[in-house]
Length: 330
Ligand code: SAM
Ligand code: SF4
Picture 1 (cartoon, rainbow, N blue to C red):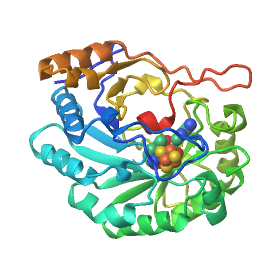
Picture 2 (cartoon, rainbow, N blue to C red; picture 1 turned 120 degrees about the horizontal axis):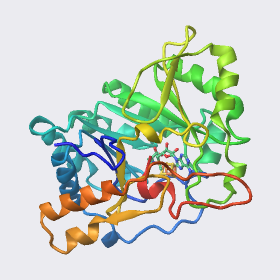
Picture 3 (tube, helix red, strand yellow; picture 1 turned 135 degrees about the horizontal axis):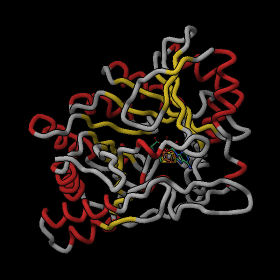
């Protein structure tokens, strides 16, 4: 079975936010004072599994758990364990995670035991004080210990770094060198205009084509065909053993090859990160509909998947998405 949208893009990748909560408050992701949702609005683990089953039936091969911080969700390992069983009997072939890494010291062993071989860890700086500043109160040693533990357990890690104006632009070379030393691929990401945080988005945004040009003088990059299923374009350099990726939703649209959809922690299926339309599956599941109905609704949702996102960042307009990034995750 294949899921294909109205523009004939094959959709085989599902990202699920398992919680809107987080143990950090990154300044580009959340406001300092966030209201999180009451528990009864969040999908139960059984509801998440049921949605996954239906997407797998329709052709999904890869599932990424995200958040908020996926590892703060109670019993997350039980969900991963259940999803992992499906790898033997269905077309599902990968379960992965986007995490801030703070709890990897505790969970790496269990993740590996339950079939998670590859994860993305978000880290915007390797300076202790700056890390504390960008996350509002995080302690970098938790993440560094977590990364070491994941490596010990043979989990392959990719570092994700949001490039944030007047914060980390001048230390990207340092981050590349640190990642190279630790044998971790690294991807830079442009700030996206999700719902408002405490600073206007145009004061946060750095176009990555400019960053690429500066780094290219040092590294003389060559483009690779390497793909991980996501939107990053990867480059290699004779000076590096790692690959360096760039995710550029604003300066270089990649929607033509989009292969994914996202489910929020409340069960809303967002067909595009950069649009506000959704189909609500929580109400469908809680109103006792059968799986045929769910699958018809998934196909319907896919027929609405837009051609491209509508992200714009400038000081005059505020076309912010009506949700923060922790609603759908990255
Ligand atoms: N808490 C986990 C983490 O930080 O990896 C998973 C969820 S977090 C929302 C997923 C990714 O989105 C992180 O890499 C984070 O840096 C990124 N992110 C958050 N807000 C963003 C924004 N406005 N623009 C671009 N990336 C953003
Ligand atoms: Fe939490 Fe991830 Fe958002 Fe940072 S980016 S506040 S770690 S959800």
